[in-house]
Length: 276
Image 1 (spheres, rainbow, N blue to C red):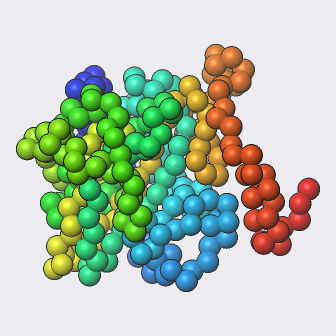
Image 2: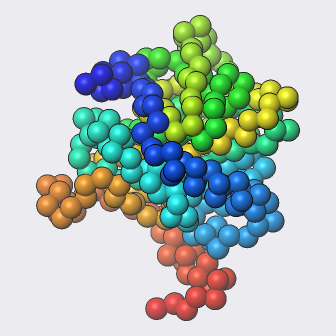
């Protein structure tokens, strides 16, 4: 009940590392070896034809859960399930996911924003921000404004060429309780679970930092609306046929763009995959 209360009142809760040390060690070792390849902007992953193209220059890799089995245990932790069930129900799917990183020489800044703030017509989502390195102020720790999720969606502006191009306009900062903002320190394996409407930001990194600030980000949604912005909705918890039936056999499915079938057909041709 404490976790539920924190999600309701503050908009976030911190779950201390629920993962086994051998798993985190194996995952970290895998990343130590594979990340230099993935971080190369000239690396051409076939998954880019079906999902969202990685943005190595901003330290963002997309859809790691679908692409690499070793990442999947992170998203399906029972600790996440027990925390989300009171707010999303027993049936939960993975809306989207990404992996964040930076090199010691990279400085980055993410302005005040809410996640998915340009999608107010969709159900509320919850985000799990899972650290693989110690995250501290100026070294990857998120800065959040407790209780800001209660104000609903803020106006947003779009600036291309930023690590996070959708943000709250600077003209609205006076309405934010920035003086109440706190940094959320995380140790490896810690899960910062928060409401998508929680206003948060990321400070510019220290130029002397040796922290890679590696973290995974998974967002979850209930079955009220079945839609994923890329690839496909994946049931993480529940999702049994009996549960689907409770939603009227056919949960509301947000229709994809009409050109998506043509787009996917062209992608298959690019990959040399026969159409059936």
